[in-house]
Length: 280
Length: 313
Image 1 (spheres, rainbow over the protein chains, first blue to last red):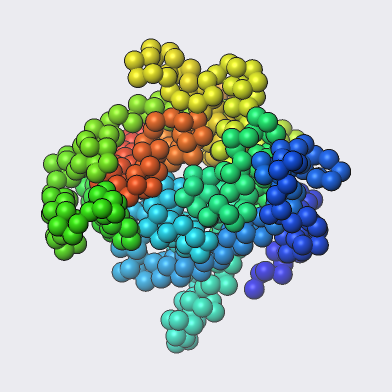
Image 2 (cartoon, rainbow over the protein chains, first blue to last red):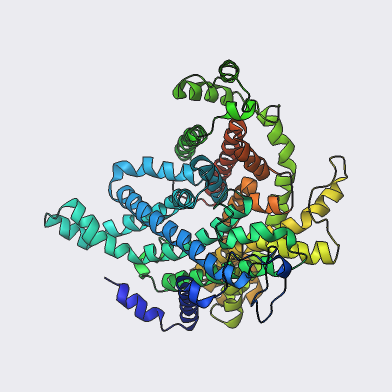
């Protein structure tokens, strides 16, 4: 396994360190939301509506007088959970598909045609259509996004599998009579860990953006659940009165997505040179 | 060459067929029933049966797919249930803002992305490269609606340079419509330049390591000529690819930006159709959007072979 080596080398790069630290802060804030934001995110105070940042309200208040900072910290739980589950789901499904397509030549063409067909739709449009079919709920948004990103992972994993399967050691274990499932699981999959890791972090970032976009269009998470996307969607018409209602949730999205991509890029830079070409 | 074209064509047709099946399955899997939505709560069972029959919704699914595909091949995407007009007509009405937006946005993205990418590659690892690479990553992290709202607040609400939303009256002169498209295309252009910076940088880096670039340098050509003539020309193929695919993905994929700026585009049409469960429009629009992507992709593949004889046949 190359994972420990990657982690060690990653921590030597300053920009990756910063990105990892920022992510850590975001995750800790989200996990400990009730402790870090004492105000109730759903407490309305109409007299205090659309206030700018102050001592009482770190980031000001929205159109119903709810504390923006509390809503962003609590919203992080939903936004991060949706994105994490999306990344996990699409990476598992995509890895499986990609391994099968890359290893079993007969299944390669049909599977990749299906992947091509799914990737012919713009991501957000496919997600909209899928959520519309499944119905707008938290779980269905995750499901839709998993379906949208699975082909992307499958393509990357397939490309890497095609490289790894030709390596000499695979031939060696095959000559030793090792079962196919074991070759895939114990010998090929570990060598795909770095491209998969890169995909996890990028899809995590894309999913945060996609969830926000869906919620913004009103076809994502139900509006009463505070995610960073629903916050902007609900308050955008008040942007000219208090820009904070749009600015701060947006900044939360940007900072998180940027850190994730920096992290993914850091991993990519450290990739095994043999696999580097297969990623684009 | 012929074999190459035939095999590419076969692949493209297979993908198109799969796209058609996907579109059909997706729209029919929807739980809502368009007929009862259309007729409201007051509808009797007879009304529902009559309208279902009128639109062919009472037949089994594979039969409906067969009917639909036969019509599609003849260029008939059906009748919108809510707009009371053919889907092709609805799409044509929405095509102009979407196409203009995509072209303007890609022009902006290319004007930013290609020079930045070249500079990044030439000064690889230096501060300027790190700044541009960082900016590119930032561009890929900003939600389009957020940038849209922020730009509207600055340039439309505060400064009043551009309309806050909309696309002008239908009979407005083209200049007015282009003016209304400035801010949205700036949003899309800025965000999409990120991808073009990355591709240009990567492609230039590949080429700059080639022997002929070293030869050009060693025969004493000025660095400018080496980079802009010898290297860039050879690096251009992947860059053009990504530009083409960006245009394709913006047809329908710019839905969030279209919504922020209230543009009556194709993406908008799909969203409103989804909210109203207008099957024929969803089907038709998704099919056309995906088909455009597949066709552009196919043309790029062919172009590859024409431009670069090294492409394997």
